[in-house]
Image (cartoon, rainbow, N blue to C red; front, top):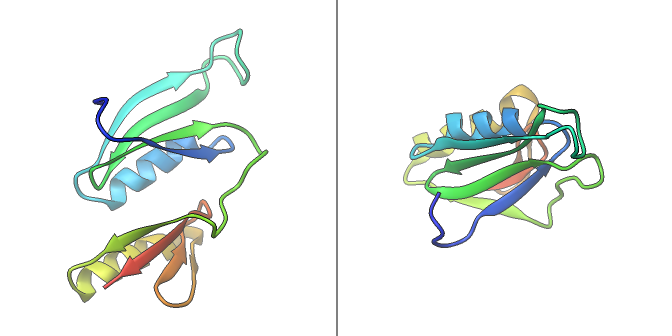
Length: 120
C-alpha cells in the first residue's frame, strides 16, 4: 500500500481476517493486502492473525485483532453513494444478510456491527 492519504483502522476481536475478506467481497475495486501474524513474544496466540491490510472500494483499511475492549457504535459510519436502486439494493442486501441489521433512513449495520449509510 502506498503512503498517500490515510488508512482507516477497524478494531475486531478475532475477526480481522474474516472481516477483510467480507468487505473485499462486497465492493468493487477491492483487494486483500498483507496479513501480519502474532509472534511468540506478542499478545495473542503465536501465528494467529494480528492485522490485515485491505482496500475496499478504493479506500485503504487495516483490520486489527485488538481484543474485546472496543466495539463499533453509531458514532462512526461510512457513506456509500449509489448511482441507482440496483446498487442501493446490492449494498443493503449484502449488509443485512448473515446477521446485519437494517436501520432507518438508509442506515444499516453489517454483521460486525459497523454502521453504513447507503445513499441513493
